Length: 172
Image (cartoon, rainbow, N blue to C red):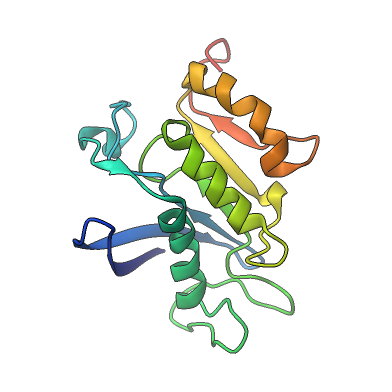
């Protein structure tokens, strides 16, 4: 399910953005972007055919979650839509999982991705469980080395959720 929103960006341009929700009866996974465009040109990804425009700010990344939760009635006092599959039930969030698998390579926008994760996972704010946030990378090895020491700060747990896309086990 694609959710669209119109927003004025920091460069003054109004743009329509899209995020994808992968709903199931008891949970919803939101796929968020970290960049506008991409430089990697992966053969399996359409985004690679678009040039990199810029990195998204932490606020723009978090904004994707905010728009999705508002559209899905996932805040107190809002009603859930009835025209599609939206997770429901007592205590069930419409958006329970977040994956950084949208447009762009998250590790090339590491500072803003880490700041967005801190905001999304803050217990006094959006309170998304750190174990339900996954960062996917195409395998940018130098950035993995830079990111690894900060993983504990972002997730504060022993298990580190991450995903790398590669065709062979050796490459992963």
